[in-house]
Image 1 (cartoon, rainbow, N blue to C red):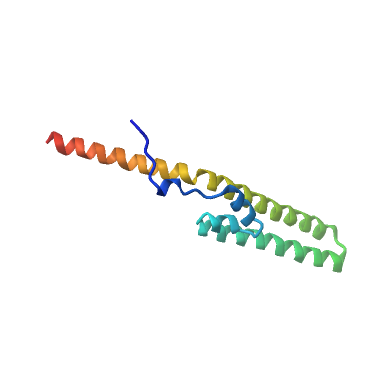
Image 2: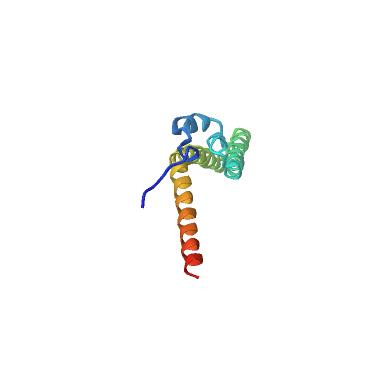
Length: 121
């Protein structure tokens, strides 16, 4: 069975552009057309940054070590979400043509099976 590629499946997203767009939280997901995932990442990263800033302010006012530990914890979470978003965007842009080609091939095979069934009747 030969694999054919139409012009649509040859349009690829650039992993480099996805990584550059990821400088902005959720930007790489927006570039790849994954809007829901972008919204989730923006919300999570924003929440982590906000909590880090809040705990930093509380630490400055009270000097309690608890706030310092919480500030650091949320800063690490913000960094994690940012790195995850960047890696996810790069991988998603790499796999986009593969997913489209596989979907096209699956549809073609389903149509072939339907034709065989209708020809056999």
